[in-house]
Image 1 (cartoon, rainbow, N blue to C red):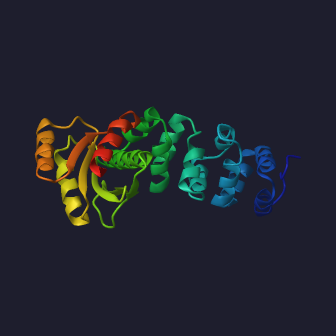
Image 2: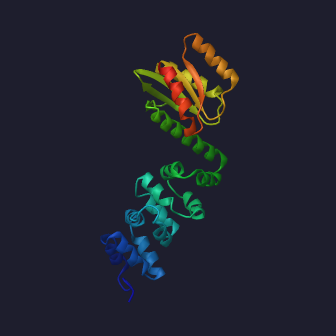
Image 3: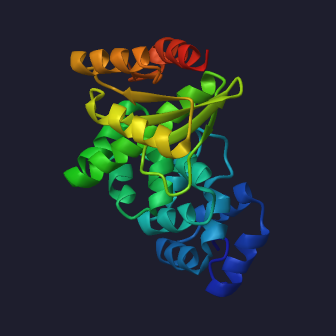
Length: 253
């Protein structure tokens, strides 16, 4: 007789909960399909997550393959978003794109942040254009925040601040920063200046992924001559960490 072949579903689910993950997976794998489905439905999201995340990273695909998409989604809601993202990243790309639509927003954000660019672009391509642009903008702001911290700056997001506005401190001075994806400085400089005014910072900085408009550079140069430290810098990825760090140093000096 197969393991648990005649045992009531509720009792079998209780046994799965009390069994070490690897043994529990083996037990489930030996069940007829209809009983496997019934037991999976009887397990709590946390029970499913325990089974799906038990293996070492890179080896969870076999276990995930056993479960239906709805079970994977349930499991993803039961663990921290970062842990769920690590688990989901081991799904085949086509299945991940299907599951992605059903995930909570926090898990989707964590997953998009952790995936390689080509996989991330595939998921974003399935979203409506407006939502995809919003997600890309948030990912860019997060990436800029990480870059600023790599430059040994302390980064704070002021309460009720618009997206992309940050308060950065180092060497006992403060800089207001506006980070904008798709900007050439024309929007960011204005927002950074406004933020510097209401945050009462020493200087202002616009960070964007496009080359800075020449007119913006001239405006910033004129502002600095008048004693208003403000500048704009292009940051697209980690390769631009050096220029960002140098600009920050000049504003803090």
